[in-house]
Image 1 (tube, one colour):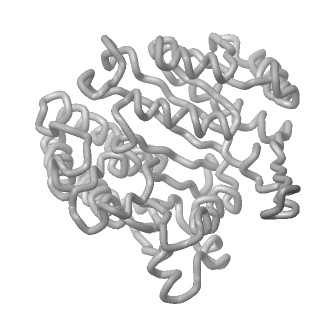
Image 2 (cartoon, helix red, strand yellow):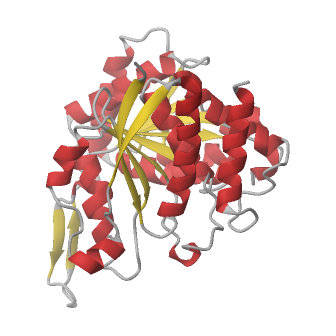
Length: 354
């Protein structure tokens, strides 16, 4: 009997439906090749659905997701709605209610022509960032007092717990142990934001259990500088939520842009979510011009999480082959049709399987 994996699919807003369609085209082909089955449940959560029904994201859906191994998300956000309303309901809802405490973001350069940095080649940009995903300023603790007046006050709490720090740091050490360089850097700002000393101390304590891993430390401002100056110095890094959000978008530009960057939102061993890190780009909706490589990469990460390692590796190899050969000539929207790129990657994974 074929292996079966249950996945929930949320195409979302803007270009989400188009890029997820191409991602599913690739993973479906790999399922056929490798003899497993994807049992998909599609969900309509989007601005269109909200404007039609008044429903952003029902709480009952979270219990349904828990019956799946993974959630495959396209993009969320629409200018017709209040800024952040749908993102908080869907993306933050998934992260917090499913306790997806690891945000995993590979930063990999496939071809030097896509890197904005001078003289940097693929061997210089190959790292993975482990971002804590459920604490920090994103908890929503705080608010605004005397809104709209001259006395207005806005407060946001940056919250860190020992449990939250330790579990994501431990995940990062295990990840580093499986990489060739066996190197892990902690990034924080404990010199200025003293409560982040909980990160520094927890990292040092957990490091004692991993004597085979070389450790390093950087403050976030220095880490951003080094990412641009010497990206080859990074292998695996772990950092608090807000810094990881900023650092990985900078990393995405180093690897060629948001059109190729993907992420996993993980609770190891439980339902986890995979998505491209770009936005919904409403201006490109329905035009068949969006680059789906980030969504396809997210599909590859999902396959890896599901235990389909060989299939996942083919996604990466196919994208690398298409970019280095010039068959995909650009990562910019409109230089290739969305469907064209999906077809090219699908054909390449089939070619790699012969």
